[in-house]
Length: 328
Image (tube, rainbow, N blue to C red):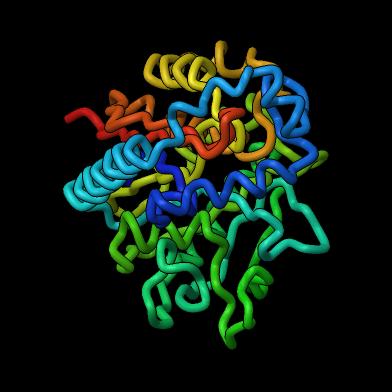
């Protein structure tokens, strides 16, 4: 029987690969975004800055940015170390596509059943090595999972060929995986992932987003299916993304972290779905991981929480680094 022994939730922000001197450049994108999600509605940048009274300007100094970047780097190093110690045989990686591969469709949940994935240039250095690499997946387990979810009345997409990543310019002759997966391979797994199954959950784009309640149920079915897999293997489940962004909300993030640590599904599902929009929606992936790990007796280890700002209005990304080790 397979044994779920490890879980992780890690941000995959491009800011984690930028020099702190360059963080404020991202703020220009925020200023031009007409739909910044914050507190259950969208704002223009001028509206948001006025509402929040430009209160985050003090956090934009180079000294402040440098200190927060150092904390993020230290947290990533600890996360990679925890992954190595876990010594898993197989991984399930939960991520999302940001119109990188799904440009003409928007499947709610897809499982990749192909044999391999590709990473490398022209993907940015924070996400990939400077050479083309091929990583082995686990098509047998992927097909098994699709059957298991079908029995539990989940209608999933079988992604059996990886589409080209249109973010890659110029387009290489291999299909680079979306950044949610690239980041995990490169930053956490040292470009040597074990056989694994990529799961693509459309947290980001209405109207096919799975609800928080559905993501909790997904974690339950994933747990039951994995523990019924006949091979004696150690399985790790990793969520890529989160916390609040592209508008940082520290109060919201701390409330979410408390509920994650307490396995408070009722509280997480009671949060207005409008709070789980844009990049903040990736929190739903965290909850699938924690549901799959709960029966192991795992307690969440919060390595760090680092809000990283890039405008006076408080846009940026809330970086949450956490993992779960199965008890015993």
